[in-house]
Image (tube, rainbow, N blue to C red; front, side):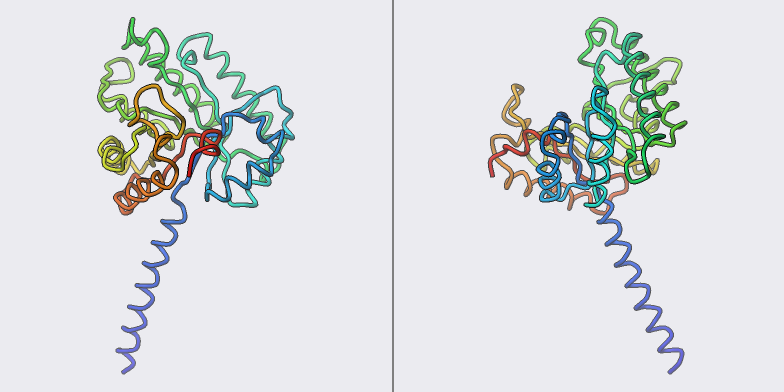
Length: 290
């Protein structure tokens, strides 16, 4: 009888433990968004926070404007933390791939070092999220391999700076980087795999308006990230796109978007490498039709 009770209790504890693991796994999944206009938190921080809370966002990439006082970001991060929202510093531009752009990057890193030092733990950034799209720089068409190498150098420089600040680095990445090869002093392979390997996390800009298409676009990256113990957030678009009606959920509205994103999340629910959803961006999401 004692042995039976012990075995029964073990099963209960084991099952409960597994359930708790599932709850924790679900809880840490990202629901992220980009906040490109920091004037939103200057003009009406509460409105922005209320919106984020209503949408159950737990991770925000907020654009850094060095003209603003540190207090603007400190207040926002502290108030966001009270709602369970992590805030990442957001910056970057295609020109960051070249020498002049590295100056902008250095200025950001200097600003972050000063900011983190001057801020309490509740006011500090949780990490840095870079949006550097090298294919928008003219060198991508004139000398793609050289531009790729410059892009890799930029990322490594940023990573070294952020390692010194003990901050994780994340990147935005288009879904088609798994079709771009590189061969240079950084080795050879697919650019998508190189970026995933050298960052803490990647948000894939899988800008399509159906779950099946989105799933198909990100399968390779999520599989590779899982092998490395890295994380992928799947990004979708809400603003009107000039690239076609299948790029954004702008036309269909939020209800349809949520249905499709639920399908994506369910498909990858137990797949290593999948870490959540990211919706681009706060401004267009706020004005999206129901």
